[in-house]
Image (cartoon, rainbow, N blue to C red; front, side, top):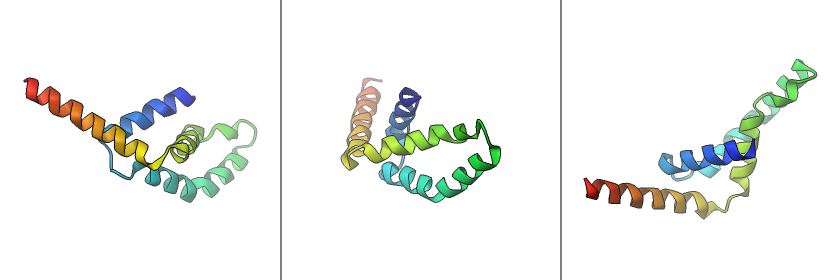
Length: 86
């Protein structure tokens, strides 16, 4: 599951808002109480409800703030080079 989250985070960082890391963690903080309650209501097996998003938020929180910015800058450079080659 961690690899999938890391891939998603890289994809989002490639073309997303410059403050993606903060947005992901903020959204998780906002929905966490509701997700936890939903897991309780679902009972056994409910622990997987939105677990991928939870993992994505955990990974985003662990990233240095400049990581997403650096990844986006690198993607822009690559895209610019590709456009120049056309």
